[in-house]
Image (cartoon, rainbow, N blue to C red; front, side):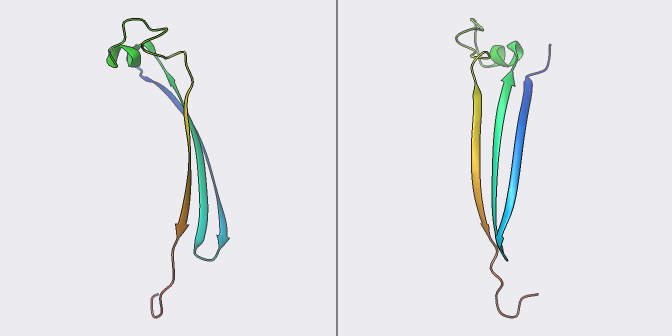
Length: 71
C-alpha cells in the first residue's frame, strides 16, 4: 500500500471584534505500515507507533489593525 495514512482536521473561528479573530484546530493522524516503514520501523506495533494516538491542537489570535488613511 503506497498510502501513508489519513489525517482528520477540525477547525473553527470566531470574530471577537472588528479586526480581531480567534481560530482553533485539532488534527489526528492515522498512519499506515508504509509510513512506519519510511520512518525506519521494523516492529510495527512498537517502533512505528501506528497503533498509538498521534494528535495535536492549535490556537491562533489574528489582529489586523486599521491604520489612519488605509483603505
